[in-house]
Amino acid sequence: MKWFNKIGGLRKRWLINTVGVIFALGMVCALIVTACFAAYYYSNMESDMRNWAENTADFFQDYIDLDYNAYYQSCISYAENFEDKNTIELQFIDRDGNIVATSYGHWSGTSPNTTDIREAFSTRGTPPPYVGKDPATGERIMAVSSPMIYSNGEIIGVLRYVTSTRLVDRQIVMVGLTSFAALLAVLLVVILSNASYLKSIMIPVAQITEKAKRISSGSYGIQIQTKYQDEIGELADTINEMSAKISQNEKMQAEFISQLSHELRTPLTVINGWSETLLLDERMDADTRQGLKIISGEAKRLTEMVMELLDFTRMQDGRMTLNVEPTDIRSEFEDTVYMYGSRLSQEGIQLQYIDDGEDIPEIPCDPKRLRQVFLNILDNAAKHGGEGKRIEATMKYEKDAVVVRIRDFGPGIPEDEIPLVKKKFYKGSSKARGTGIGLAVCDEIVEMHGGTLTLENALGGGTLVTVRLPGAE
Image (cartoon, rainbow, N blue to C red; front, side):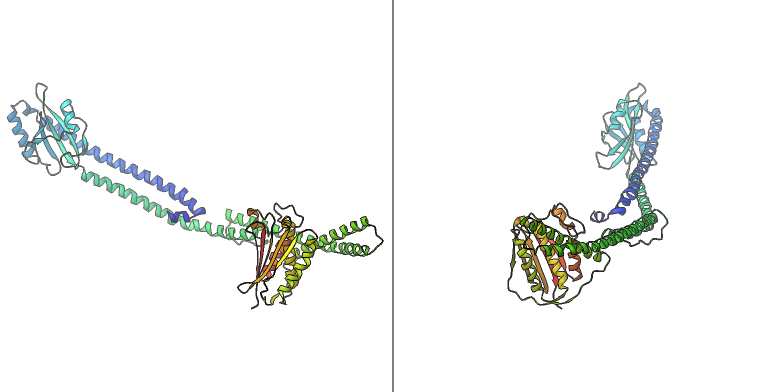
């Protein structure tokens, strides 16, 4: 049944609900037909044998009043001249249960002692037939017995007809096989006739499913082409309308974010500039200076968020580009680590750069964009894993690729959130501040370089981020 387990979806439901039901009903009908034919054949056989037994018993009424020897001789004579001896056996059984004459020859023997014989000795009518195995030969038979009643009412013997049921059983088996063959033929016709119909459903459903998956992954605006005017066509039209509306909403959202970001840059630039200028005044009291530092820090944080939003809108509408040039990627990474490390040290977090001294060749890349990626990953490590008070950063050249690993020693990421953390606006259970689009932008930048960005929980705790960039060709 492995092939059945591989069948899924509508095909399996169709097999179970249609073919399965037809097969079950067909089997019931085949069994009923076979049982009816079996009852018919056995009923006719029983009726014929019962009539023969009763007629023969009536015929022998003239001989029963004779003495036993005359009766015995008449039985032998009748058995020898029995016309249907090739298909049915006629037996005469005396009161002691011995066979005194048979159409198969003149012989004496012990009665088979079946139920029909015993009941014939205890009743004055024709008892029910015996259907079962012959005790002597093991062959399946049908036997009908009729009592031989003397004039004084005494039963002096039993007249018995016996025949094999082999031919009848063979006919019943043939009826059953014919019924089953007819059922298989009907199933074959149903399967072949419905195959094209099922195919006409499965192909458009598969196409709709594939397009729906693309829409759910972010390919908004794509349309499903279908020639059907039924429910499938209606479903495709509904998904097309949904895709178009989502695409329109995404475009409006991106335009709004872009305009808002541009509008925010000017006042933030002014706030940053004046806060830095005012901080140069040595006559300022300590509380005012502390307040200005807070204003300056928050303004810089807002500026970073605005830049993230601008990058996100560029990424959404395909305007993000790379300025690729041969770059000493180790130098760019080390500068980023040292610059950010001094900032983290003020927060009590140790950023440890592990340098193995391995030579790393220059690679073609956009150094500004990759520095943005490194800074964002380090910032995430500080925000989400800062309670571990330690971050490790390494860069190696492995299998013609530059591999950057940044690990924090915080609580890590819940397993069910790992596949989602790179999705835009996803923050999960984290309570750290942020827009939730930093990693999405970083992932896009790395992919534009032909590389990969992966996140996983490190052994021993914490989160490990790995950036793999292709080396120089």
